[in-house]
Length: 348
Image (cartoon, rainbow, N blue to C red):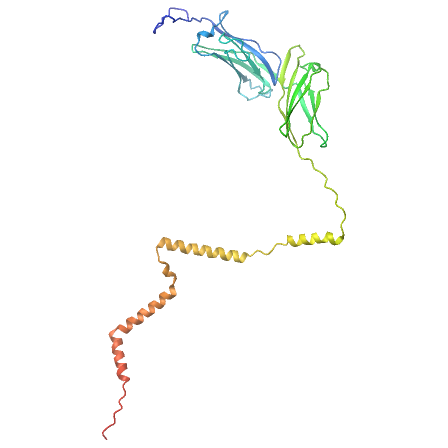
């Protein structure tokens, strides 16, 4: 903002003031048309007026964030996809970036997130300001080539991969291919079609049943002359275990044929299961467990289980009490006196 400014702080001999008046983010326009899986280089510049900002004056390395926002157009496949973070460029002199801290961001864009209509958006954040720029909506077309895999009909034959162009946006006579195949046994093989006009198919070895993973890179030109490089979506196909015919058995005599059948029928007859014993044992275990739990909870002694001994003891104790009483003793005396016989004779 124009006007007088005052800086407060500890001023050192090496201190300086950086004045940025008209900071803008300049991004190269995206190529058109674009296709799913396409890879291309993109450059953006942070400018102050007509000059590129010297990013060495900042403490941290500046980064450029690239996002694509779905237009939510129902006519395209990306309806409802929202926001996709495509790439992050760092002004650090690595990768595609030519020089560190020069205010120029260069990186690679990979369109591997889906076809449809998108709005590109680029953002740079610094400790002082944030700059954001959005471009006009673009349409990402589907992949220009389809992969058709024909599985082998026999173990000795090969699997066949055919590449079929599906759009008129590319010059089919300029297409070149490089494929990498990962076999079920862990090995890898590479195939190339490097001659324009060559038959767009190749044969893969039959390495048995399992999962085959195929990655194909496509190089060519658009009909307007623009060159492109893209990777087709990864293709996986499963080869199941092929059925084999059982070897024919020689004819055997009738008695030898019947003997195994008789043994098999004898082994297949199940023996009767002792359900009664199993039920009885389980009932005994349940009753015993219930009684034990009752004794533990009530604190009763285990001698209560001997109920017949308890009745005999009670009878003996009652008998002893009766004999010890006075009436029983008197009755015993009377009985004793009755037992004495008078054997004396009269005087007469």
